[in-house]
Image (tube, rainbow, N blue to C red; front, side, top):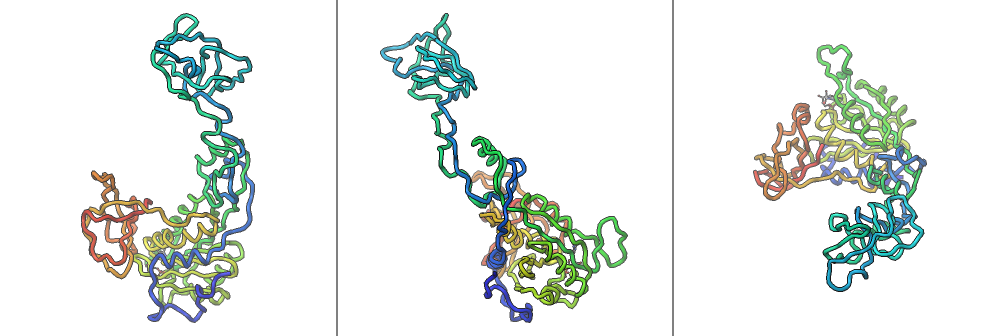
Length: 419
Ligand code: AMP
Ligand code: MG
């Protein structure tokens, strides 16, 4: 269950009295409300791509499993190189990748990349440094003992930690597991995320648009964002008009099927903002947060039974920013990921901007070429208005302008998240 300090009872609506909290505290509250799904499933490696590892993976094999040649060349014994060069060594055999040499060799052995280094040999001289002379090779330069040999277990040692619980399985992780001979792996089950777009004015693209109506931008934006998360499965409950009972009904329906519900719109304090009432009437617990952020401000976190509830503002830019900064970290925890926070990259501002020092502002940015310090220069698009679709559509990142700061000037170090 969730801590009682987190959740305010129904009558604690956000009013003048509700404290304004920093965005990281809002995210921490949302994360704290998310209890990771416990169920797991075992999937073949490819099917597990992008999923969340349910248990630590340890090595059962040494990699490489045998001493292997890192080059095409000749296997030699370091002890053969006494006195002054050049050295002439008779070639007594040949091993290629996949061979299992059993006989013993002497002198030098022709060896190809990935082949086992024969017993008694310890060094590989690359072919470019050997001259062929009949059935022998001539080497002018004394090789370093052990060069070009990958020792068994030097990459991965049996028993050692490979991947941790809560890691997302990316292509290169799967390569490591495959290298261990793993065929299937245990991952957390997908989290089921319900989406509800609230707003009487909303129509889906393709439907006729009457005066006063707008098309639903948030639905496809959140769906696409979640589709990119292989650990999530979206259940789309469409548009629900600004009607208390309709929203309550949709929430109740979604709560029976989902681990989390995200609503957009209806979270401000207007009389058509019914989400608070709908959550509370369904017996839900709700924390109405006023977050010191722009865009964003009103965000709700709560529980409907065991289902996590995340109520985001309706303006698309505010939806995007609150989704990435508050909702997504909570969903990532729900999915069992060990790392929940956004990924920030250092950059340098190439713009001037006056901001309010009492809040975090998130502004859409484009990335310019890096300066001598290697950091990209950021130009700002628009002014981060909540309703602006154009600016975010042109953005390559969202820059975070920290609280305390009242003015951004060219040359100032800031961070951004790539989008
Ligand atoms: P609300 O949070 O319901 O007060 O909505 C704030 C603003 O965002 C209003 O102008 C809404 O029309 C607009 N809005 C709400 N939901 C959406 C949506 N799904 N797509 C585009 N705009 C929306
Ligand atoms: Mg609305």
